[in-house]
Length: 201
Image (cartoon, rainbow, N blue to C red; front, side, top):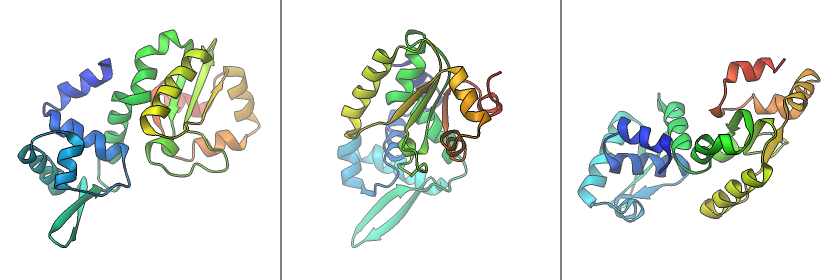
């Protein structure tokens, strides 16, 4: 179990709640009814019903009725949406792997996941799901982590690894790749976004 996931379990005591948060925040366009959620989360029906009802009540989930079924789906306008998105993507999958194993991946100064991965939204002309900035990056290890995640989610993951000098040079010439990167919502895994925006000098 990753260290970030342990932190999450200390913040949210209910394991069913954590499973539900993970499911909806990593499947932002899915709509699911109670019975299907029970199968997906592999938990007892009353516990799942209770957590979905709580999430509906606070506005994290929206509901649509079709016949005699209620379908639950994520509300991206929820007041703590981005905070929860960050918590989940730092605690599970590729994000957690990067955070936990970053010392073995080289001298990484910044690592971010883009909305292409976290929300399945377009990121401009440059298709990228993750960007890493640092020195002596172990690309063999990075590739292994990415391929592991690709198998888990069932799609290709596009990523870029930049040195400090490459990032600075791109930023100084207002490279479209860098401009588009910071026009979107990012989940910052390593580093400080403000410094990232100012450049590395």
